[in-house]
Image (cartoon, rainbow, N blue to C red; front, side, top):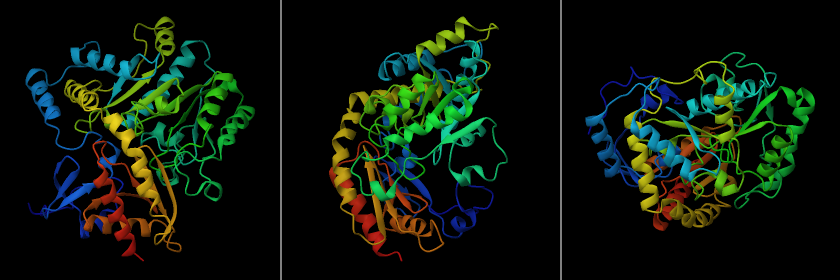
Length: 437
């Protein structure tokens, strides 16, 4: 298949459009662990698309479920009406999410799942008579999507600096990255649990009576893969409980097997009050997000509502029947093929392969957890991100898709990955590094 004859009409997201359109990377097909480029090359998918194709590409059972659903019910309005699959999917998620988290609010993306979580947190505090609890706490270097709520609690500078003053009443914890103490950590770093105590500083500044919720990624992904220091998440949970503050885990990346468990909460043994998820929910075939809450949040909202409608929030496509069909088929694949267990099996192989690049050209740090790894490169003078971007392009030429977050190369292959493909990923990225100055 040839390249499109005109690339100019499309404004591409998070992409240097001028650069891309001079030298485009066009994908025309995908199957299992590989993309197919427009020049008919197989490209090993080292990123599960965008952290999301957890079951691999071209799944027949998902295709058939989507096709059947389109023939039966292509759309059902989510306000004041329901359809069977949205209830079935909510029940299936309640079965695999932490105990006590049995209520699910559907949306269309991770960004919407986060904004839904923030609004639910604020509405819950008001409903239970704590209307002064309106402040939201995020974390430096956090990524919570691109809605105004998400970029307000997020902590990535470029995602915030162009868009005005954002939401008021937001503060941020310090990030957990400490290169001097934790470089080349295998799994969770040893140092940094005390950084959770930064929440106590924020409580002293604003008072707990004004704080509704804290939101963090259990493992920060888009900022460059930052596993939490040992003990950090438990400490954060304890402080939130102590001060009656909701804890939200943004598991858009970590849910659905990325750490070898259904959720990062399960992996770390820490149960938050709200979990946001998306990406792997439908294997990225149909856009969908979900916000899963503790029973006491849902029950309080219903019991203390001041209007027949308990939550004035939702989307035209909340719980879309076709998305629900895709999600149910995806959950079947995860269960029937034991993909979460395979992820747990592959995790130490990925750790070993990633850390074998220590000492390679340009490499200054390597981080990993579960089926996630990152190789941080030394920046090229003042051209931050240039070396990472060039390495990503060179890897594409060599037949590997890897994600460049600035000068950090991120790996998150589909959970069907095998040992030889793990070796191939890191062999090719090492070859790419050798060809980049």
